[in-house]
Structures are given as structure tokens and as C-alpha cells.
Image (cartoon, rainbow, N blue to C red; front, side, top):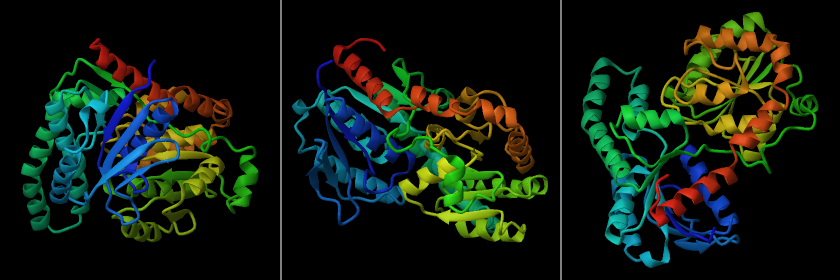
Length: 412
């Protein structure tokens, strides 16, 4: 296929943290460039060290507009600045446009429609539900007046977010999701049935995320050789990720498996609350909070852990930590929420908890830890699954195909 000229319009982009969607955009861009395509990224630059425009050694061009996205009001303002930058871009220099961030999408589709370019939108999740769920979760311990005020205030904002996102998807030439579950969300929540819709899962960098040559030796090197089993949870510490329920589950797990150690890597608004709850449950020596860790540290932890846990209780469109863990040949257990069963069931039976309650998680963890036969059968299978299903090059190849089809005006 001939080289494509692609413009990716987004909000937060490397080196700034953009959560899972930021990791997804960065790796797809790098892989597309590696496959011989020319990619330009338009993104916010909130930090002083990010240049207004730069060309990376591999040829990726990054153009920055000023903006931050801590809340919807700042997001709308940043989106307006995005359009000012886009007005200076020559549309004839590009074959297709990619996007998938609520606030910058408002500018992206205004520019796409004006210049009649094919647009591909990535749907990472329902923006209205994600935002309102997070705010309501943070207010759950407040008094009834604060909770009620938060709920009433979020209703019009949620409605606006939903309408905006639905409009972007309806206007797109093609829609890409990270899972089949996300396609169902588009249909059920947004009431849309796009004709050109494809699943393009996230991935893990196989040059970085790979199995350890000696898991036991690495576990000892890291000082966790006494942990039986060693469990890892890499999660944002917010209510919907379910880390609080996983900690509750540990009080049951440690009664049956007293040598268990749970490592929790990540930051978030309820970190202090989780640490206090862990101490209150007498889990000081059984649950360890690592806070922010570098990517290199994260890889080593995946490689050392006996298995990972994804305890999400709502709104899981994919979960890059699943792909990263599998790539290190570390099995993953998780809740029956969102896309988690869709992904974890590919490892085989017994990897999905029966429910999201602490006892459901505890029973699943205990059963898996004691099932030596299952753990033995999974050796090598997790890494193989990641290589076959969750590669950034595979994702880039799918984007390449969609963009090519749109340019030719064919159906997906």
C-alpha cells in the first residue's frame, strides 16, 4: 500500500500523561510511522518543556496548541484553541484525519467537514458516563446535600457530553473501537449504528513487555520472594476501577493464603482513602502501595508477579494493563465488567470472577492460586495471546486498511 499522509488530532499526547487513550494514540502513531506512513499529531501542550512544533527522529511531526483538560470548561477552551491551530494547516497535505478526544473532536470535525477529508474516530468509552461516574464516586462519602448537588449539576453536563460524542461518531467516515463491548455501548447508550465500524484492540510493546527469563529469580531480586502468591494491580486509584473492593477481598484471601502480597501501582484521587482502609483491615504487610512507577519498573513487576488482577466495577472499554501483563506471560484475572470477559476468556476458563463483590474476587483469586494445573497450562499461552492479538503493529495495520478503504470510498 502507498504511504498515507495522516493527521491525528487529540488532546493530551506524549510526554504528558493521557491515560489509556494517550498511550494508545502514542503507540499507534509510532507504529504507523514505522510502517512508512507520514503522521502529524495536533495536541495540547500544557507543559513548558513541550515545544510548539517539533519533528521526532522517526519523522513524526507534533504541533501543539495551548490548553489543559482538568475540567469541561478548560477542555472547551482548549478545543477552541485547537481549531485556531487547525486553520493554519493545509488540508491538501493529508489523506485522512484520526481523532477520539471529546473536546478536540469538536474542532477536528469542524475542520474535517469544511475541508471534506475522510475522518476516523476512535471511541474509547462514553465520555458522559465516565465523567459523571468519576465525580459521583468522589462525592460518595460526602453528605446528602453535596451528593444531590453533584448529581443535579452533572445532568446537563452529561447530556451535553453525550450529544457531542454522538454527533462526532455520526459524522465520522469510520468508527474504531478497542473491543466488541464498546461497539455495543455505541449502539445501546448512544443509539447509533455506524455502518463502518471496526474493532482495533490496544497492545503492548513487545520490545519492552516480554516474559522474564527467570520469574523466581526476578521476584527474589525485587525482594518479593516470600510472597506466595505475588499479585499485581496496575490501576488508576479512582472509584470505578474497583481497587477498594480488591482490598476488601484481601482480608478473605489472606485467611486462606497467608503468604499473599498484593502490589498496587498507580495514583489517583482516593489513594489516601485506600491506604487508610488497608491499615484498618490489618493488611499493612499484605497490601503495598507503590504509587507512580516508571514503565521499566512496571515491566519488571509484571514479569515477577504470579498473576495480575483487574477489579474494575464499571466502564472498562479495554484495559491496556491486561495486554501488558499478558505480554509478560503473566495471567490476568478480572471482573465480569465491560470488555474484561471478552479479553480474559481467551486465556481459557476460570479467569473471570463470578461478580464484582469482594467475596467474588477473593474466591476467584484463591481458586486460581490453588489450581496448579491451570497455572501450568497458562505458561507461554498468555505471551502468545498478546503477540497474536495485542500488537501495536497489528493495530497500525488495521488503521492503514480503514484509511485506505475510506480514501477509495469502499465499504469496510
